[in-house]
Figure 1: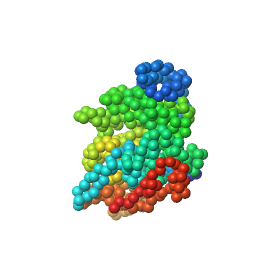
Figure 2 (figure 1 turned 120 degrees about the horizontal axis):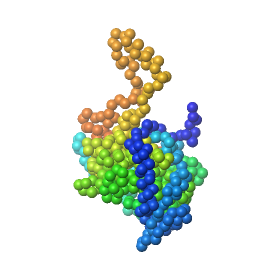
Figure 3 (figure 1 turned 60 degrees about the horizontal axis):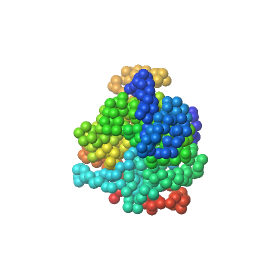
Length: 503
């Protein structure tokens, strides 16, 4: 048996047999069209340094009025894909919570996501729910991180609350959102970078928490997300600068693209996947040209346009089609895939939210994407985080993981199976009641996890949330917090606190 060393410690996730939506010919067709897109019309680039990097690597750069056009040759795509690693590590304060994402292994993990402006607070008048929308804050982010640390099926924490405290400015937002998260969770923490000038301080914080520069490289407790190409096909100035800087640190990075089918990308499946694939390949190319071999994820976040109000739409069949195709393209390029499932279009928990979420929760894992974000607590698309909804999502993902489990049909079980059947047939009662699995010894689905005959599932989820908020906190060591306070500018007192208990 493999030793449980730092090299192998990780959260188990669920290993699936990926379902194929695209055949080999269709994958090749999409790959070819994406490469043609990268040459004509190419990528509009608004960052001078990125343009120079591509020019020096062999791309054709054409000056336009306010930007340049990058014409990226297929040979450059091949070169950068060859240097991108197929296996990356997302570390954690608790090494048992690390994630090893391997493009060759369809082991699925579930993460939170978005940067919601609203925390949906739920109270009850008897069994009737009362909803209060609260502005996001450091305190709510701390609560979300503590909740996430205690949700069994949540494997990684993408900061899910936009901190809007009066003292939070662009210059100190990054250090506070990362610290508030890391001080309240022992799982991996991931976020976008608001201010490029904060990167050095965020990386310094990560290294302090990990134990040093070498320790961080082996166990990167934090990572970044960057949407470097704004759809359609525009490499924006500030995000390109962030990608270049993060890549030089060789920190794990998601190259994310989020085109909206019917608005910023074609509505039809072929057009959408061809464009988003080109956009992600352009971002991966920039990352690898700056730092060959740096850890990078293929970040797929396509949505479609809702036809009655033109909002983005998550609970739709086309959403699954887009993401299934993207997961297959990531596997084709041997890149770990960051995918999407679980956002609800409605603004409160209920039947519609459950239907929309389960449409994607139950489907996307079958694609074999290694890292599925947006999976917990999101409502009103990605505007609201609701802790009770996160508890419900955790329960539903647990059910889905049972559904994804491989068949236990093995030669080793044959003899025991025959013995059991023969034993039962020799009894008077002829039932298998004495051979039922014991939940205390085996993983077995018992019943709906949040069943409540009187108050319903939402009230049960509320009670579970309150129970979790009473669980003991696992803050960073005092000496670590003291060092961060002394060495990292801009730290606010509330980011040094653990999540408050609910009153």
